[in-house]
Length: 153
Image (cartoon, rainbow, N blue to C red):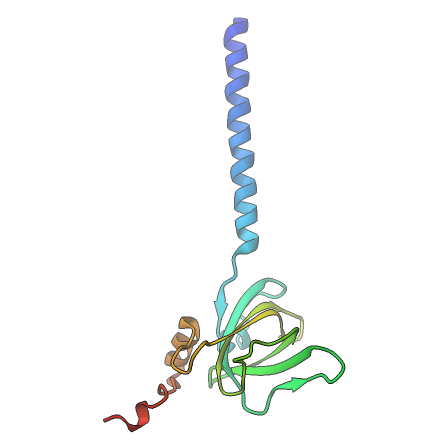
C-alpha cells in the first residue's frame, strides 16, 4: 500500500474512532440523567429500580408529615389511593407543600423501599396537578374534583 493511502486510512480510522467515543460518552451521560416517573402503586409492586434516580408523585397523606426538631429532615407518605410510599427529604420544603396536596419527589429508592428525595415539587395553585400525578390518580379512579367545581351544575 502506498504511503499516501496509508496516511488517509489512518486519518479515516482516527475520525471514526473519535466519533464512536463521542457518541458513547454522550449516551452514557444521557443514561445517567434519565429519571422516569413511577406511581406509589408501581413502586410498591417493585417496578421502580433501586438506587436509581426516579420521580414519584402522589397526594401527601393526611397526618403523615414528620419534621425533625433538630434538623431539616422531613418524612411523609404519598399515595395514589391504592398504595402508599414513604418519602424522606432533607431540606426546605416548598412553601405550597401541605398534606392532602399533589407533589412530585425526585430521588432514589433505598433497600427498605423508602424514597430518599433530593427535590420535592409542589403544585402552584389549587387547580394544578402534575400530569403524571393526575394520570396515576385517574387510573386509580380517585381524581379529586377541582376547587369550586362541587357547587357547579
